[in-house]
Image 1: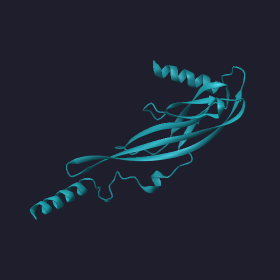
Image 2: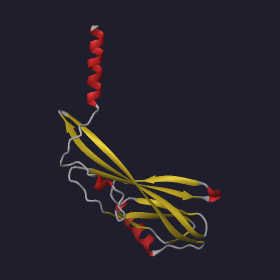
Image 3: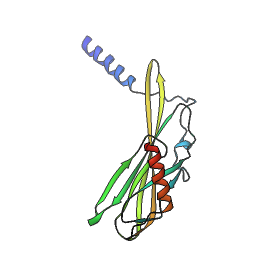
Length: 169
């Protein structure tokens, strides 16, 4: 009988440790803050590229940020290669302006699918313990580019390459 009582107390303890109270706090995200906003990101992507690998970048991240929250961005790109193989790559560099790779696989117009994964990290305390709540939001974009056969580098890509070089130094 005593073992059953101890087992019940132990189960109650484990269940209560993993629960977050549904109390409103000043740092709590409201539902309106989590909606997929159309103008949340500005991209720098060349509209014309040559065959092969090229770069793009998130130029601006325009979320109203809360003071004690952390934010992480990743760009997930589905690039098509020869033989219609699609490879999904994830790019992140710990900033709000990550670079990402795009591939021109055939001449003509090409659609590039981008997914921006936004992670909002919310710290909170319950009694003497600290916890971290992670909200992941996915924003989908499709960009149409023109791929040319000859060697070509646009002004946008020249600027992106200069920015990348400066950040590496």
